[in-house]
Length: 226
Image 1: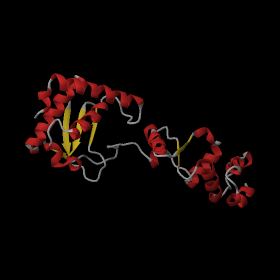
Image 2: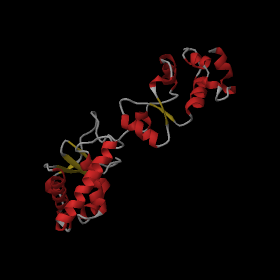
Image 3: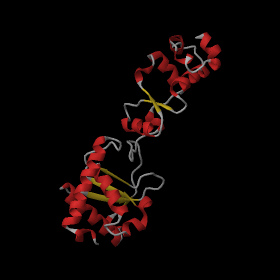
Image 4: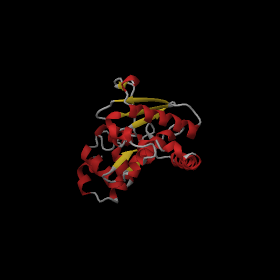
């Protein structure tokens, strides 16, 4: 451990992988600069820890070029030092998956239906009927004013939420056949059965619903003309 503390700055990347270095990482007296140097040599500057609590966040990290460090890559005592010094963080803290709501979040700013414009009502009616034709189920829709968030819509438990603050007046006024409308609704409807954006199941569901949309366009083109 003392050797690692003294020589860390001079270690070549291939030397940082040696067993004596791993043993030194387990010592509670190892210094932060030494831990940072070894972890960087082994896993690079852009790194995260595999996060079992946010598997989609881990996939997002991989897609953005991060090296994902598996739990078994180092001994438990070495992990203790890494976490103490914040040398590497769980993927869910670096590239978290989308989570529109949290248990301690504030209540939504819901726009009551009686305050909806005609364009809002028409869009909601289309969204409901479109869902019924694609999925074969009924749909509940609410519209909210949520400033300062990154999402335009979310879906869960048979309920679609549209964020007027992100979508704006223009989106609700677009024709039903507009790409922006169908793109958003198809994506959200995939979440009827799939939650992980980066899973194989997600793209299979998207292609399946896309095929149903094409069939619906052929069978009833007038449905999209409003």
